[in-house]
Length: 240
Image (cartoon, rainbow, N blue to C red; front, side, top):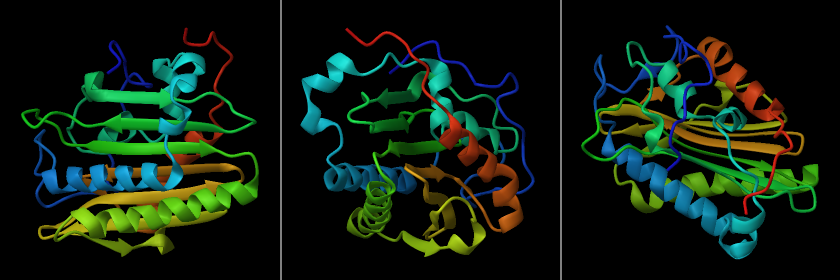
């Protein structure tokens, strides 16, 4: 994990009135719903299986990927965003976050972000997200479809008692959007987001925050998607 990371904004985000928390997440920090974390793990595993992940590039990625800086988390949905939406959550402990950015290969680039605290940590939010910058809109459309399919398969395969409720009508952003609420035995426990704008595809699973109306989505999630899609990786030395 990266050390010494700090929030992108001084205040770490503002507490909203729109996004809601799982009924299993009362006021104050606590461990997130572990079932939801299993959902994250299963979804990411399926996505990597469908899309190929980083494994196929092996040592090449390790030797040519750009050096990752704290501010690069702006290019994906991250823990500062999600925990900033939770009342009285405080600043996240960023020692449990990891961001990997692949090299630019023929105009494409893959980003992979994880925030998963250990079982004994007192945390409210969890996040697993990615970004794919594709060579063409056609390839981006294919990636969007694969990620959407992978999210559904991941939940059905492993997360017993958890279903995806399609709430895509709440999110009007980009060229394609899939927006689903994760619902467990206690009620909503998180959200799945897959969106495409042009050649960029953003994916995120987070919780226990979830959205119940379009106004909250427009106020809190849409600016995060705008920022992530607009972020350009500055030129910097490669990892040796």
